[in-house]
Image (cartoon, rainbow, N blue to C red):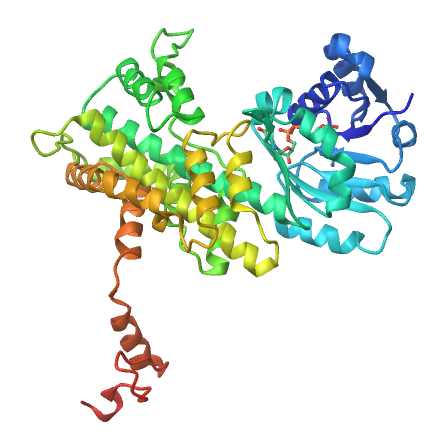
Length: 472
Ligand code: NDP
């Protein structure tokens, strides 16, 4: 009995995806570089093992799959993927499909499509979001490749994907690197979302001296309103959790040094490459980098001590509502920026990315899943040509309602010496974006002064340089 699909890489993500695939009634062949892991995995699989063919050699693995063979590669991203492709190729037949499901840089995915173009093999670059839990019970799946190759794997992928109102959170998004690009921007938005939540936590902790359980309650309340989302939900749970060693809130026992594996940075690099401002995402990536400089921060606080005062909002405002609306406004900016990067890439690479579909498949399974994505799907469906999410009628109404709170919260945080880089970037993004007359006239004059770059005149007259050369 042959398998419908194969999977290489029985690490955290691969083994959970394989169990998910088997559980949905699909027969799957699995292979892992270190063979001992395959045996271990079959033991863990229990009854699901009936749908799993464990293979110890590449030959055995390939022979176990029905041609044309879809093979999910779920291993460490980077050179390992190329080495794995090379190792597989001599064993494959025409039309077999290699699916890189790791967190690849979309530029590597594009290069792999090029490399495999005339080989008779097919390639898919597939973004998978949702971490371990998502992989096991339903991730969000973003596919890039040819529609034909997607058709071969669509049944299996939609069977394992998260479902939102019955619809699978899995879609073909475009050719070649489209799936991995969308996954990268998903992660960029995730960085911004997490950082902005952490900044609000910082205001409550350091500006208002609230303890973790109380802050948990505030996030819990927000999760029942407009901020309802997985990240707010887990923030409440994290803040409630107790350390089993000391009994203190676990969050207070965790070192304030955040890791990053690259996708946030890639999303900022790609945004910059295309000239799309993604300032809230940039601020979030920079904040993680700054967080990692623990020793420098400790030394700097000794040099500049006591720079913080109490967070004070103007009288008469309800603190929790103000913070909720501020976070909401900033979240709109981050998503607007992420989607603006997607539209620019869609044009640059000829992908025709379906924005409403992207928002829909992020609705369940992935880390940034939230009620708010429904609004984004609706806004892009109603306004497919919108230049930016924030100018759509639905979102401009939300911005009008929430922006004043973001302004007051950022102002109060800045006055109190509390760092809010992502919230402040989001605010400045709104303020710059809706400013019909900016200050780049001065930049243009400076550029012309020192570099004779010329400028456009407001009256359209044709006089490309300023009077500086003449000493005016
Ligand atoms: P793990 O570290 O748990 O597993 C890594 C897997 O890669 C192992 O099966 C390992 O095999 C295999 N591997 C490593 N190097 C090679 C190589 N040179 N040749 C062949 N196989 C190799 O990683 P994850 O499961 O967490 O991640 C896998 C991919 O999924 C990565 O691209 C990651 O970025 C991505 N991803 C991870 C998410 C997560 O939340 N963890 C979420 C979404 C995507 P061996 O047992 O022999 O070491």
